[in-house]
Image 1 (cartoon, rainbow, N blue to C red):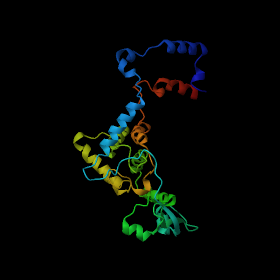
Image 2: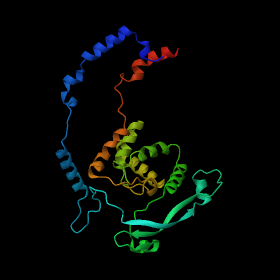
Image 3: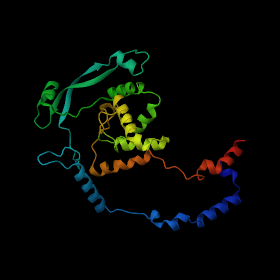
Image 4: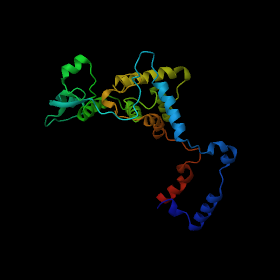
Amino acid sequence: MTLHSTIPAALQDKISQAAATALDPDYKRYPHLFKVYKLTDEEICKHQAQTISNQCEAKPGEPQANALPDELEPARYVPVSGVFKIVPKTRLKQAGWKKVASAVHYSQPTEFLDTNTGKVLTNRDVFMRSINVGIGYSISERYIESLVTFNNCTAKELPFIRFILCARNRRGGLIMDVRDLIDIWLGLEGIQVRSTDRARKRRSMVNMLKKRKILANDTTLSPHFQLRAKVSRREAVQEETEIVRLVVPAAKPGHSLEERYGHLNSRTAQ
């Protein structure tokens, strides 16, 4: 039986009528909290332009490397040939393989075509000229490296690592500063840390993420955990709002569904 079926029809009508005429007392006391604000496209563009200009402001003579393009540009270097390599069995065992029946392969490019000049570059040419060809880990490599990382983590570290990985953006980093995410995590878990020890706690948790190869540095994830995609300026600004997916607002004391209707559920269970 469901909770709705245990309420008589007459009582349901009364509840519906009361709900239609009820007025939240907070609506009278704090009307400014119930206002709906709508931003025009002009205001959004102005805010985005100001935000991007602050983030990408470079010193005189330095290029703005962090500037985000409005339109997607095609890749300049395209792989044209490569080889298949075998993952060592020792690495597979570290990733959790109990028995390796057959070899596991992954692809690795060996030559790249420069679409601007038409010249074919080898891996040595790319290395000697420090060219960024934009080729990252293959899917199989990322999967194996992720399993190795998770198997090296303790049971207490995994929930926090899972929380951090849920806060990834599509530019190889996090949607917020890692220290802010740590403060949110401590609040969600109800972990009380004195103000004098909070900085030390943040530092130890950041060091743990680096030790487990989740973070490459304070702002960038390790390559096999990075999400890479071409994002517009609007999408880059909107990524920060995705924190609401991780933080679920708690109900007021005495107003949660379990506290208000828990006795009815216990009756139906009987």
